[in-house]
Amino acid sequence: MTPPADGMNLDGVTRLIDFAKQSALTTTGFGHLDNRGDVDSSLPPSLMITARMTFSFSIAAELGFDECATLAARGIGSLAHDFFDPTHGGFVSVPASHPGDGTKSAYDTTFVLLAASTAHAIGVTGADQVLDRALDALFTHFWREDLGIFANSFNQDFSVAEPYLGANANMHAVEALIAASTALRDSSLMAHALRISDFMVNQQARESEWMMPEHFTPLGEPHPAFNAENPADEFRPYGVTIGHLFEWSRLLLELHHSGIDNAHWIPEAAINLYNTAKEVGWAADGAEGFVYTVDWEGQPVVRDRMMWVVAEAISAAAQIEQSNLLETAQGDVAAWTAHLATMFEDTEHGSWHHQLDAEGKPSSTIARGKPDAYHLLQALLIPQLPLGCGLLDRIHQNQSRTSENP
Image (tube, rainbow, N blue to C red; front, side, top):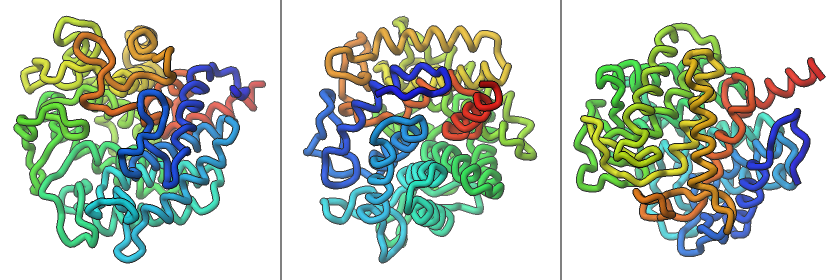
């Protein structure tokens, strides 16, 4: 059922959420959905997927979708009991009830923080405790005060750090800290988001002429050759990840919208990241669409087309347009939305394909199945919403605007 939502078009969101609901047909958290929408029982429960789905169902609940408040509560309960480690603190990527090495990652924990902040803001019972635990884990164990960013991962008792630092985890930390700061009205969290952004974008990306490095040594030095032998890694690919340039562009402008001090550099950086992604990533191999990655000279490395990259391009273009920064952004929203529908929508099995190969055919060599509503949910909603500090805040801004102008 599509709820009334202040004149918004929620047809796509309805298809996405109806498909995503099938992820609850499992015993722990939310399951990894295959291309047909069935839970893939060959994969263990995932902290990342459970947190992302909890976030998505929290957003859907705020929009009035049936059953989604219950699903958001289910997700919070699972994060609190299945994935939390009461002995050492923090959240394990795979629960103790399934085979796993007890790894605790900043990447996964930031999604716990995003999910719990969003669920807390809509009144889900127990979300406040999960939120507090996520913040405690991040700042007690992961925070690198010397660099102003988060470490990447640890073993279960936090005694051994992975000798690697990554932009991906820190990018999602910015998103989660914005959401937590807004939910808790704690400006110190926004300040941490700005400090992370300064290191990753204002320093590293700027020094690389906006071809943003993703991988770093434990000392915070760029590692440009990282994963050259495994360039198509789903979370740590070699080279420049086009979708992350777009994603950083949007998140920077959301941070800037908060009114935080010392963020004067953000609009220029956001535009440069956006333009670089568009110019270097679109049709880099001569075919329509965004390639997954390019090398440091802008030549395509992994030519597969990922749905999440298009989704983030749409969200970034909408943010750029709403911020009145580029006149061409509105046209980009329209063009990339049409591309998403034409190339990625799966009219046979539902939802959207997560990966196409270089010839535009559905593939699963990088992204397995259709487990993720998170990126696409934002791309379907952000172009219809006013500026805000995160997706939920945008929805609240829209609700306020509509109530003032019925």
